[in-house]
Length: 320
Image: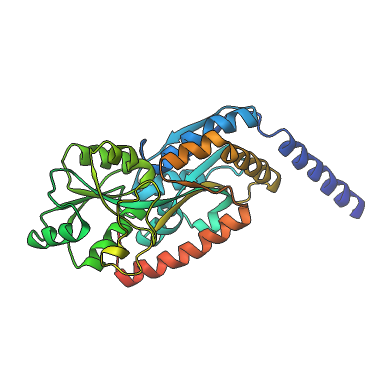
């Protein structure tokens, strides 16, 4: 009996090894849990062509928006752990939404395996040019004269954009009416059209419109000014001392995905993000490329989840 069990174990080992050695043998799908045009979508579409070339199979982007990123997040969490369905996720997906929603559709610490962080990007508070404020302090003063009348778009209830926007309002002692969208892209479209007054967005998505003057940047959320917006002060410089918020976007796989597949995907991501054209593309949008290890990215997610858990509790932010 013992010999039979040993033989069976060896057979299973060789079978699993053979399966991962043949990976990938078909199309890989990267689920973006937001509508096209936002930071997470930009990340996915930037790296997909390079991954296609390195892995030898098509890597396609699949936008599945809804519930602050949880609709797309659940799709990947419930998928087979075979490396063919991956998740492009930001803090909204792995830290904020699971803490904000009363009944989260997945547990980010249990249901995913980290592959690699891809970019680090600051948020920027942007307004429509019809809003007369030229500085954050002027904007705060204006909002206080119109409590609840001015609007702030979000990339969706329970997203990091939403949470950072709420924290800005709490810290500044102002209140605007929130307008949730299914991603930063649709929010930006309405901001450009003047349907909403303001938006807290990742710099990657808003940078082009700021440069052309279609929207106005009042502040960045990091502790230092963004190199691409040297004339735009931080929130800390404008009265919100200690304010610091960024977005880390990266690639996740379903839990229990074989280690060989994770390592192969990680190696490919590192090679793609090391390409100068990719680095230049992200830098032009205000993002810094990462390419950290699965362990490093996984540890960051764990720490950020705990951090956001405390913020959500302290601020009493909850969505159904």
